[in-house]
Every structure is written in C-alpha cells, then in structure tokens.
Length: 125
Image: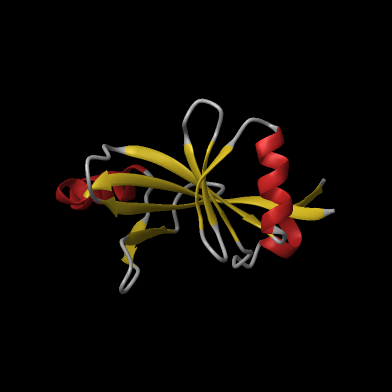
C-alpha cells in the first residue's frame, strides 16, 4: 500500500503570455505571485484555494492548459495503479513522471515534498 495526494493545480501558458496569465490568476484568487528562481513556475501564495496554485511558462506549440501535480510515496506502484485506470506515461524520469489521463489531460506524479503530505495523503493500492 502506498499514499497519494493532489498537491497543486498548475496553469500553463506560453512564455509570451505568462505575465498576463499570472497577473490574472493572482488577482482572481487574491494571491501574491512568487517566482521560483531558476524555474518556469510562479507560485501564487495565499490563493483562495484548497490546493496550491501556480503558473508555468511553457514553450513550443503547446497552448494554454491546466495540469495537476500529484504526490506519491511509491512512484512505480502509482504509475501501475493509474495505468490500470486508463492513464498512460508520456515521459518517465528517475524521480517523477508526466502522464495523461484517458482523455489527454496532463498530470505529473511527484515525490512527496509538501508539508501536508503526512496529514492529507490517503493510502491506496
């Protein structure tokens, strides 16, 4: 048995639009933008939201979208469980995976790093 938790909602936008998107969602959720040094992410701290919320600058031909970050303490087991539910691995890395749900929505499986994991995660499997 392993544990899982939805950690974050990420609002992805092309680099040319990231400042506009960040300003909009910071205002909409009454949050304060905090860029993450060296990363394409801007945390929206203090957002009126249950999960954490951030924006991310994306490149290429990808248009605006939303993706979810899920934490798990057993990456292999959670990948297998989600594949059984119809998800597929898009890209696998040593410590995390980018997946798509059965209709193509992107989400990431990450190791537990949030303070809430110990108290808010649930056992599955």
